[in-house]
Structure formats: structure tokens, C-alpha cells
Image (cartoon, rainbow, N blue to C red):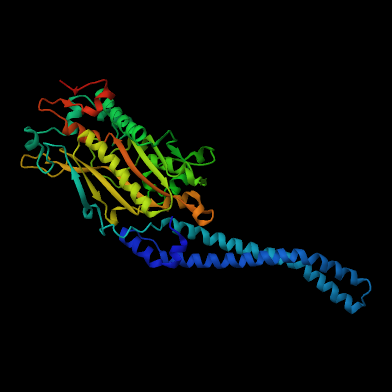
Length: 468
């Protein structure tokens, strides 16, 4: 949620931001509704002050007029009675006027708040302009010694690779047919060493972020109220991606939604709280099952593990002071953590600066990390993919956008104890089964087996290889 004071001071900045992100929102109408609302609130406050003042004055005035009635002549008596009647009506008149203003404010606030929630956070000035992921800019890349992702897998390893789908089938690591039978398209079953590898990589990520980097481990609900989705910025824009559980139709007081990332629960944890400034930054991590409808993804990555409805993810969140420099430093730190993790896994990757059109409503900046996957990319002369980078992580800087929506603040002593909205950041630590794609494809051997990455072996009881 953007700062309305900033919007009033510089509406053009927010118009540019929405345009650069490709988001259609009527900012002029929001400004107009905001002006009307503020005017009505001022008028209402004035009438309430008048009502309060009147309540102190009217009793003695009526008592004085009543006392004069007994000695008044007939003509004077009529005037006093009219004056008393007018005095008695004034509170009712004011009350009716205040109630009328209430109705007008309520009517305006529905549209005012709806529009306010739709205004995206403007991209930072150093974010490159662009319309889609095609306009994203590569920052840097890394690959282990002896492997060059600029060359096809066959030139690196000396044999034609299998796709992760072929490996999963040949090694009996997954069962897509039964997954679809149970739950429909984009569902799967991990079995045997496939499930063990999945758990191993999640445990590696979780241990890394908690044991080595001091993030507090959290277990949180995967079902949340609507206000948690709104507060974290996933609604209204991402409503079509969420699974909706209509508990209200079954007699419950509120509906629930399945989270698409642990970020939702981690951030909603401190909604409507004033956090002790000395406790900042808060560093939280969770491993959670995540659910996404993948609405609008028809025909995209329909086979395999890349784009599925249910997955598990280790997520990291930082809540810090409202300082841009501190936010930027945490953004770099969180990315460095993931780079170290991927280097331990010896997976080739690149960092990509997302352009304005690929940021989404809530992000001031976002860096994607993409791992190289031999089974992706354009086809060669014999119809085999030549390999390509695919997104496995996203690191976002949000400033106070989420915390303002969640009403999450701290008391700033430098400002005389004034409450200030916190800043927040988030980043994927590990998301599986997607991360299994580069692991399986890059660690495959010519005989069809897969070598278990050295760093994962302690989590698989020392197992060195999957398959013969």
C-alpha cells in the first residue's frame, strides 16, 4: 500500500510507476475520492465538535428559558416556547447531519480503499524499464569449474542428456499418472529416492538459513484469512492464483485461502503490531507447502516439475527499519546467501535484474536467480533441447508497501518516539521440486544414473548415487 501523502504531493510519480509496471489503475479518480473523503471527514469533525459544545450549553440555556416561562406574558411566552423547541431540536438535527455524512463517507471509502489497494509501488529509479521478462537484464553468472553453460550439455559431458522427465521415469522417482488421477493436471507423486532427494534439498536450505545465518525457524499456518493475503499484497492482483476455501458457506465466520508462499504467513505474523525497535531486524525462515492455481499458464511447462500446483519451499523474510540503505543491503545479503547455497550444490546459475514490467504490484525491485537446465531451451538439429536458464529463486525489496497494508510499525526514537512503518524483504531459499530439475539433469551419468551432490549426501544417509 502506497503512502497517500506521497500520492497527494506527487501523483505523477505513481502514474509513471503504474505505467512502467503495465498496471491499469485510475489514480486521478483516487485523488478525487481522497479529496472528497477528507473534506467530508473535516465537515463531520466540525459538526461533532459543534455537537459536543452544544451538549454543554443547551442544558443551562433550556433551564434558563424554562425558568422564565412562569413570569412571561403570553406573547413573550410563545417566543420562549419556540426558543426552547429550537434548542431541543438542535442535537437531533446535528445527529441527523452527522449520520448523513457517515453514509457518504462509507460509500466513498469503498471505492477509495479499493483503488488505494490497486496502486502499485513505483519501481526504484535504477530498475530498467521493460514490458515483460524478455526485457530483464542479466547481472552476472556463475558455473562450477569444468562446466560451461554457454555450451550444450553434450559438449560439456560427452554424452546426450536425458530430460528430468526421462530420468524421473527411468529411475522410478516420480509418478505423474497417479498424481493426475488423484488431483488433476500439474500434480505428481514423488517416490523413493525422488522423495528423499526432495527432502534432502529442503533440509539443506533450512539448515543453511537457520543454523548459518541466524534466521529464526517458524512453523506457520498454510491456510490464512483474506486480510493476510490483502496485507501482503497478493490480493487483489493475485486473487486468481489462490485456492479459495469458502468456509463462510459452511457456517464459519470467514473464508480461508491456501498460501502460495511462506512469505504470506511470515509477514502476517506481526500484523497490527508495534514492534520493539531494538528487536529489528526480524529474520524469519519457514518451510511450507505452497499452492498456486497457475491461472493463465495454460500450455506453459505442462509436463514435468517446473510449473506445478503444489510444492514445498524454504522462504526467508527480513523486517527491518525504514531505511532505504538498510533495505538495499539486506537485499544484497539475502541474494548472497542463495548464491553460496547454489555454489555448494555446484549448479550453474545467473542473476537477472527484473525490468519494471516484470516486478508485480508490490516490489520496488526484484532479482531473479535462474539455474541452468539442460532440458530447457530451443531444440537442436535432432530435436533435443540445448539447455537454458530457468527461474528458481526471486529476491524482492518492498520498502514499507507490505508493512503499511499490515499496519506493522516500530517506535522510532530518533523521531521522538513516533511510530514508523517497517520495511520488508523476502527471498526463496529453496523451492522443490523445481530445484530437482537442474540437480537431476546436471548430475546425470552416461549410464542413466544420477550422482547425489556431495552437499546432499549427509541428508541421504551417505548415498552417493541414484540408480545403478
